[in-house]
Image (tube, rainbow over all chains, first blue to last red; front, side, top):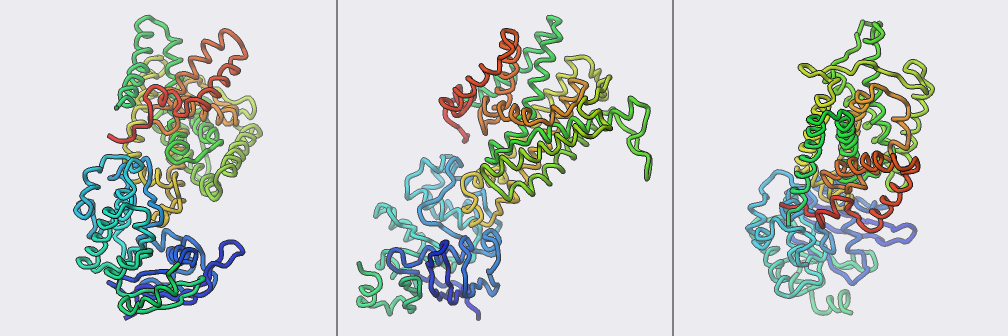
Length: 230
Length: 327
């Protein structure tokens, strides 16, 4: 079976400066892959090339067997890429409910299911998204991505800067997604301990290259110190 | 706090009550002023969809306003000249029927907006302003140099076009038509803004990239909004031409684009009744200050400056408070 995501030898540039020098990443259906690395190693850039928000220069990106090269971002998203971008990007000025339905596509995920996953959102459904707490905004953006009924959920630093209790709530929601729906998830995060409970495999980036790939269980303290430690 | 819907209701009633009172007191001029407010508010309501809800600053909406006006003249002129609109390859008569003229004006406006939008929306920001302005000027100079419909002098349509069952030359009856259309368009706009299309449009205004990441192409949304906007402004143009029974290239000039934008900004950008409040204030100032001095636009400029600097929500924003988008 071909993997859901195949990225091979990806290079990408911001203007003249090269950010990715050869990223390889595979992700199978129903698999949760952790994308790790220190700050500035290319995690977000990798996600931006996968979602076609940044063009790649060389290499191939295939999603569900289809090449994404040359596709505009909205087309790629319609193939089933559900992005939860870094930094909680809800649409301010729209209510929680409006944020959820703005880009919804038909499928198993609907408002009732998102509200069941994040009951706080239901309580706040009429409220302006800008007036939510950081954690609630993050839940909203995850809900918004799920409402597009993606085949792959991409979480870029979904728990960054949130209070520990809220982080737990979001992590347990992600664990629930994995256990109950078998949704494929690509997750970027800094918390190795939390990732080890969720992810099946890890891909570690260093200086814009894939430096290590392997099952989460094979991640040793030495590896973590080598690639992730400060 | 829900002051904005209340204020909208007050504005809608006031715009209805003033001409009715004037009708009772036999003051036809006031009715005509109110009709002008309703029609210009309709033009503003068209622009508000692009500018307020879509965030597309178009300085070329006079093109659609003028196209609506000329659509009326092109259809009605053959009738008053006992001529045909078209004699080859088949004969097409002109028409004096308002619904047909409105339909033609809106189709022509939508088509023009489709072409202008498809080209202009490849740009953004200042470039979008300049390219819409350029298209507007192109049509303006075309109208000036096209002799068939009067060129620079414009063309008069001596008898107002008809609407089944109404005497459109009676000011209050013509007002009722303009007011009815304005309210219908505002009701549709209200529904559109709350529909998924409107929500996605609000998203595209904030961050087009984020919307693309969710699978919606911002360009298509913007183009649809621009086409709807152009069609509504063209409808207002057809009504305005009927109000004056006269069309000239000045309807297409960039000053007209600026005035339509002033209605929206005075009243409140992205507020449903913003164009109504703005057009009403504009006409009142024109009437009162214009009686005091020929240079009344100096005062209009000062008021506009004050609103842009100190009251970003325009009249509606000042009276109704912070944006209250949610019920």
